[in-house]
Length: 230
Image (cartoon, rainbow, N blue to C red; front, side, top):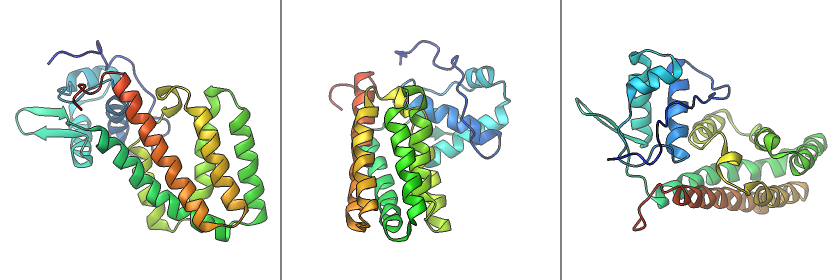
């Protein structure tokens, strides 16, 4: 299979503060290459190229590929290597919708337990997000969701972290014009939390993450990630 993107591994990504060992950083690097369309379904993962791009040895690379296989992003076959899984548009959207179900549950909690100070802080973050240059959108988006997620029970926070790691870290670069849609989504979430309306907060968060999934799938389609039949 020929690759539409020439030398996709040469552009080294900073995993962006990933917590964990070297294998976690390598997994984040390969995961982003897949989820932003640099590596397409059926592409064989080039371990040597990863090693050169990140200056790492084969052992943590193999460990990272096993993790990505367990996530369903790669098909790992003994003696043949690892290949990007045959992900469909529905797979992409489904992941974001699952993320939305968990995030929505937490937004519902936040509407009930947030203090007045918490709400003021959330408003401040949202205002900065709405007026920030695109280079800072990811920062304020993460702060907005992190504050809401801070009310989650310990195990739910762990699950949210797992789901968050499985979406592109550079979403605002990856999905063009997403910032305008995200501002509207955050508006709805904030309005529901201010009104202490847990049901509306949950629904707004679920809708926001669904829309994120559709936007991500549309962006992958535009990048030629799938054949037209998919």
